[in-house]
Image 1 (cartoon, rainbow, N blue to C red):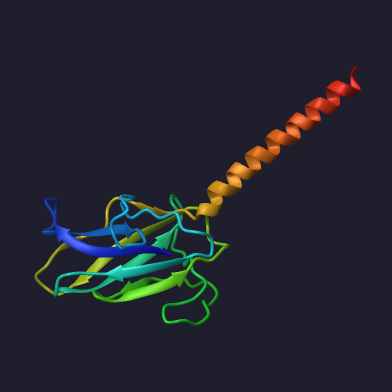
Image 2 (image 1 turned 180 degrees about the horizontal axis):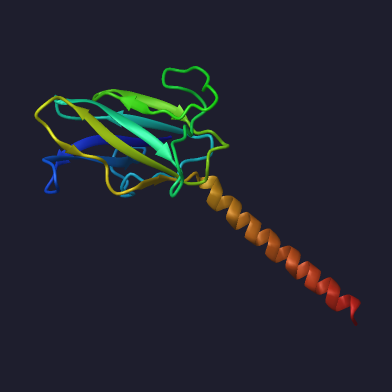
Length: 166
């Protein structure tokens, strides 16, 4: 199961704080992928949030890079239940809470997620930056399998043509 932890940290950018995301390994340590995920298809993603007492909640929106509008790339809603047609989120999570969602196998191959923090007055927080991607592992496997299959079929076709022309 993949885990993404959303948090805030001091910033030297425009605002005093900024939203950060970390993807975690099985033991709960930062996996060095900077919040990018490569989960199994239909795999689960656990979203966990941390934050100072002034963070009310985080709002996470999903989209296709370069696309217009938002998507909901999961099979269920937060807390369970069926996803209504046309539902596009957002995922909202409070600090010290977790939500686990299952990827929809029909979701696009690349999913961008953006995070905003809703805070109490007096604090300013930059949104999560840069763009972070969720790319299910099956895309890489399917691409490799397709390439190998095409190479084998091409070799067989070439051998048959050579044999036929002799």
